[in-house]
Length: 341
Image 1 (spheres, one colour):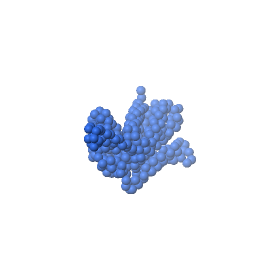
Image 2: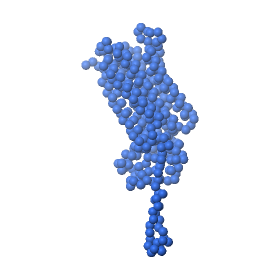
Image 3: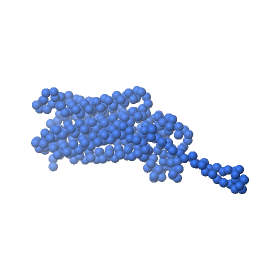
C-alpha cells in the first residue's frame, strides 16, 4: 500500500471533532446547572462546530477522489472532482475558525468593563472575520490553467492565505492576555481566579497551531503533489478549530465541578448562584456581603461567565418560632407557635 495521509487525516478529524463536541456539551450542561440562558457566544460556538463538522465530512469524502494521496497514486480522472470539493471544504474550515474565535471574543466582551478593552476586542472581532472571510471567498477565483478573465493570481491567493492565518494566530495570542485583565477584578477566591485565567488562556494552543499552519501554506500551495500536502494543512485546521472550541468551553465548568464535588462528598456546600445548599438540603446565605456582591455589585462577580443577570432569582422561606409566655402562664402551660413568611 502506497504511503498516504488519508488514515492520519481521517482519524485526527474524527477524534478531535468528538472531543471538542464533548467539551462544548459540558459547557452547555454547566450553564444548565445554573439555570442560565444560552447567550450569543454559546450559539456562535455551536455554529462554529457545525461548520467544522461540514468541513470534516467533505474532507473525508474527498479522500475517495485522492485527497491525502500522492499524485502518482491518484486516478487522474478523479482530479476534477477533487479540485471542486477542496475549495468548498476549505471554505467551511476557514469560516469555522473565524466563528470559533468570534465566540471567545463575544464571551470576553461580556466581561470587560473598560472602554479601550471593548474597542480592542471589537477591532479584533471585525478584522479577524474580515481577513478569514476574504481568503475563504478569494480562493474560488484563483487562476487555473489556462487563466480565466478576472481570476486572482495564485501568488496573491497564497499571500492572502498566509496573512489571514498569521493574523488569526496573532489574535489568539493577544486574547491570552485579556482573561488576566478581566478575571482578576472579579469577587471570588484567588485560587478560582487563577484556574479560570489559566483555562481561558488555553487559546495559546490555537495560536501556536495557527503559526505553524501559516508556515506550511506556501510550500503546499506551490507543490505539484498538492493532494498529499493539503491533507496536512487540513489536519492543522482541524486542530486549530477544536483547540479554540475547547479553550472557549473549559472556563464555564466551575458550576459543574462544584456539582460533582458535592455529589462525591468532597465539598460541604453546593453553590451555583447567590447562596449555597448544605447537605441536609436547607438553603443558606453565607453573609450580607455575599448577598450584596451577588445583586448590587454583580458586574464584578460570576454573572458574566455563568449567564444572563436577569435569570438570577432566589426565593427564601423564613421560619420563625417563638413562645407566648403570657398565655402560657394564664393557661398553666407553654404553647409554641410557628409563622412562615
